[in-house]
Amino acid sequence: MIFERSVENRFAYSLPECDVPARDTEDLIPAGLLRKKAAELPELGEADVLRHFVGLSKKNHGVLSGFYPLGSCTMKYNPAINEVVSSLPGFTDAHPLINCQGSLRLMYELQGMLAEITGMDAFSLQPAAGAHGEHAGLMIIKACHEKNGRSERTKILVPDSAHGTNPASVSMMGMDTVHVKSDKNGNVDINDLRARIDDKIAGLMLTNPSTLGLFEVNVEEIAEIVHGAGGLLYYDGANQNAIMGISRPGDMGFDVMHLNLHKTFSAPHGGGGPGSGPVGVKKDLAAFLPRPAIVLDGKGIFRLDEDMPDSIGRVRSFYGNFSVMVRAYAYILSMGAAGLKSASENAVLNANYLMFKLKEFMKIEYDRICMHEFVAAGTPQKEQGVSALDIAKRMLDFGVHPPTIYFPLIVKEAMMFEPTESESMQTLDAFVEIMRGIIKEASENPDLLKTAPHNTPVGRLDDVKAARKPVLTWK
Ligand SMILES: *Cc1c(COP(=O)(O)O)cnc(C)c1O
Image (cartoon, rainbow, N blue to C red; front, top):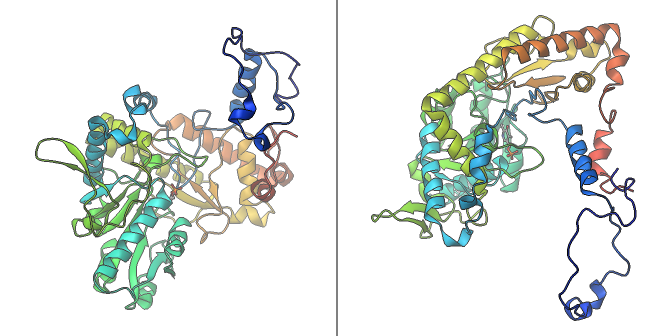
């Protein structure tokens, strides 16, 4: 701990004697806000400080320290060049109120690229996260129904495999979630969908491929049913990693969608941000997009257009998280159309390779070709007294980040793996051997798993207490 290493009067700086006349601090700061005694700060040399922080960073697992197959979250390698580009002073120093032509052009062009990749007609880059994009998209759906005099449409259909943010966004909008069941193959149960349709339906939110990692084979039929009932189709596009350059939500019949630039398009994520969840629409809905729109006038000048009477309004200060947009722009340009397509092909290939290898000794929930991720079930191990959580904790001992566990909710003891396109066959093979060993241990030495992890800086934590009552100070 940095405080324990503190030595009185040791400094990490040397500055010349202050030659500015001391002013009476009470003139500047109200007495009630003045410190009564000196702040308790550690006193260390520069090398000690650096060693402390580098040491802390090494205790953490990241995609640059090892394999990170966290399903649904697309923890892929983000090319370092995009980090360099996003920190160019021309971008980082541009004041947001100046409406710098270069920055506006980048955003305008990025919107166009995203529209082309997804088959939508228009995008707004304002939303700052996936859930924020969902919320903006639902606002658009609501505004559209209201404009057409159908404000009684307040129900949103959400499949039971959906990401938790979907029903949460519906609630945030003051709308009602109607759950739709999945069938035994992991598709939307069409009969259940038909049974839940009525004239209060505002729309359906669908993730395709679903969070089960499966391509929704009935998507066209689903679109027909929902449109036929006067509803709109919302596409949760948080993970495009399986379909870039191969299939497009716009062609599948979706009207509104969001993307997570911080999953598919080269921004590191986790820890809460910054993110970017652009919202895209078909042209009939473009008038409802957040205001202002970025437009190119006849003289080749980029402008912000506030004149959008049907807009849902502004959903974020300034433009959203600009540096995330720069990374996405650089990523898309450097990959090119063919590169994006091959990224998706490799993501799908890697996921299927891993799934087929793990199938030798693990239960795979849906026995069909997967997209960018797949779900294993720890139910056979559970019978031996070992839970998915125990298996996940044991993985930490081998320097890999565990997959997402206990999600999707419809699979018991779920473990959702997403290897991503950026992992080599050697990494995947090594991981398979780690898993083979762990599954063997589960039957031979279950206690080893139940008390794991053993090799990490801290042992097993009380997850609930850590989230509810975090200890954030050193004492
Ligand atoms: C990650 C994710 C979201 C939410 O994105 P955030 O940026 O975390 O708000 C929504 N849907 C799916 C399918 C996701 O994987």
